[in-house]
Length: 359
Ligand SMILES: NC(=O)c1ccc[n+]([C@@H]2O[C@H](COP(=O)([O-])OP(=O)(O)OC[C@H]3O[C@@H](n4cnc5c(N)ncnc54)[C@H](O)[C@@H]3O)[C@@H](O)[C@H]2O)c1
Image (cartoon, rainbow, N blue to C red; front, top):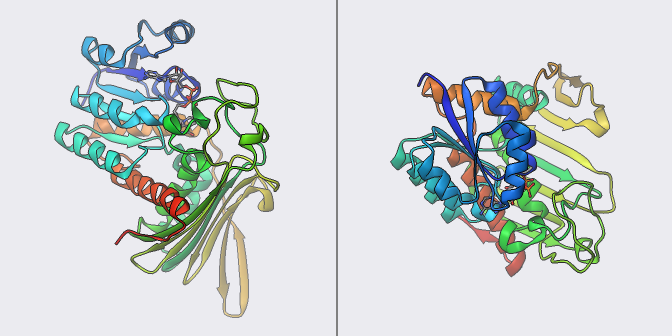
């Protein structure tokens, strides 16, 4: 595919302004033709700021009126599946924000829509493009870990509830809380490092000990309401996943909790291990490789190239280039759907108190 690609964006919030618009501009050869938001006032203001000419309040009208090659779905989670399917059916390639969908069934419908339309579909797991994650992945791909059999994936915020009373804390709109919002990022990274084994069984628990009391609020989020506003999602989740190949994964995610915040990923293989832990190892060398040489235990800092662009810019540019080259996206929809399956199973297990058996 050559020539200028026409892009349309649904949602005029944080991720559009911080991620997708700079991403398309960095990609080059993309004209951001239209922006849509149900909040038309917000859409107009953002469009004016960013120099986007056409504004819509209804995404279906945008899809009909504009001849779009690319659509970004940056709306609240509950709309991702339908908007993606409609955009694919209108002939556009789609970059849908995470989480891919609220249910595995919806994620499968999105995959089917992409297949039918013969368009590229990817999901916004931009963390894969962070240099430290790419360095860890390269080490794993070189076979340095041997067979991977266990992973720990943790994304913990001490005070990070986004927009108290906003769509983020409304179960109908968000589908879930910390697990749905940031647990999906850490689960995606762990699965990517582990080579996407097939999940077999999931057990999990969720908690809401801060949000309902109006505590643990972060500094971001587009809307804020007083204490007592709707909060019916989790602010901490823990889970354990067993895979068909015998490997296991422990996941934890929080928006709020009494503990150190930060991200930690540990991947254990038969010949070596890799750990991302910027709190313990420092920001300069946050990734370490663990192995042994005879009796000697080795722990080596991994060199991470300096980022010259944001992970969002790298993600969007890479996806656009892959569309032009006719190559699949780095994050395939099938991979992202596995994250949805695990997240959905954690919520099911938490609701029933039972292990969820998948295969
Ligand atoms: N990749 C990441 O790390 C990352 C970071 C932030 C957000 N996100 C994801 O991006 C999505 C949007 O998050 P955000 O932080 O930008 O939220 P936001 O609240 O800042 O913006 C969402 C926008 O969507 C609009 N909207 C709601 N319903 C709509 C509809 N039916 N049609 C069109 N517009 C509609 C809202 O009016 C709002 O302007 C979420 O799914 C979120 O999970 C991803």
